[in-house]
Image (cartoon, rainbow, N blue to C red):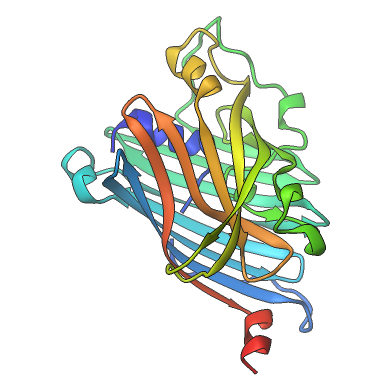
Length: 277
């Protein structure tokens, strides 16, 4: 997978690793877990694969993802990476507590560790640092307030009664990845039915738009392209009616349509267990 595609993936949403540990919560709290495999393709050709592990218990969450080349992607890259995040769901908001990402691509190591609280970035470690550039819009403390890490942003709490409707897309995701601060603005497109990958049922399809805020260089061609790029996210329940996760993400690139889509989902929850009984 080339570096530009990797960057685009990270900018859009950090998507789909394996096992995780649950955060402590009351014994009667609603529980759900998702284990998922995601296929990554461009112009219909498989270039990578991702893994997702998510646990929800009450209003606490813990998640891990991994990403590595696959298919023809193994001919161009040996890079791989993973991320983990934890935090709390407060109403329809996500309040992260910690995030860590480590990856290797283009013979370079990338690392980010964020300590978060009350919606603010309180401490961070980032490698490598950007080289000084007068054009780059500086990331300030203001940009780090009420921001989420990329993995936590993939969790979308909703009101139960309207979770699989247009309201699911009525949100702006303020994301800070350690280097840049950007928004993903979602808007409702339609409801689709999906089947055969571990989840059978409706998904909410949202249009998405990437909006740079800070840390970027406005004149760069990649920034200008991303601002206008056509993007879409399909959201499905994460074992609970009040939390949605990406089922499919697509982005039009200069090399063709980049798609990250669930190939296999294992969803377990008290709701599905109750249904079986």
